[in-house]
Length: 168
Image (cartoon, rainbow, N blue to C red; front, side, top):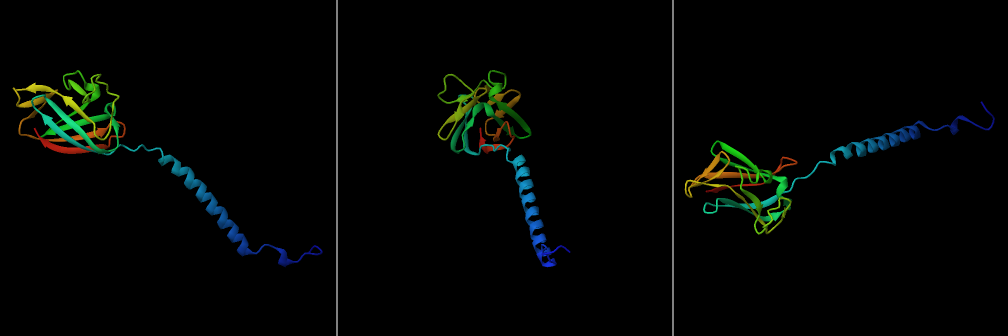
C-alpha cells in the first residue's frame, strides 16, 4: 500500500453504477435522436373539405374548396367511380380524349400550376355523351341518375385529400 492512501479513497460501487447509467441514458438519447431524423422527412398530404357538383349542360364537374389545406392542381389526381368502372384524371390528361379541361374557374390561362385554396373552384370537362344524358371521360361514361364516387388524391404521397359522392 502507498503511504497516505487507504482503501476508503476508492470510488464506491454505487457511484460506478450511477456513472454507467448516466452514460447509457446519454447513448440512448443520441441513438433515439438520430433514428428519429429518418421518420421526420415523411411528407404530409393536404386535407381539404371539397364539394363536387356535376353540370350535364357544360359536361363538367365542379370542385369547390370549402376549407382545409391548399393544393396545386398539377399535384392531384381525381378518381371517378360508377358501379364497377373507375377512371383517374389529372391535369396532365388535359387536351386528351380523357379530359378537355382541368383548371380553376376564372383562370383563362388554363395553368395547371394554380394553387387551389379555400373559396376557389376548379373543374374538369369531359365530352357530351348522348345529348345531355351523360359525360364521357376517355372510356368511362358517367350516366344521368347514376351515383358517382369521387376521390381527390395527392399524387406524391398517394393519400386522399378529399372524397365524396354525387348523382349525375
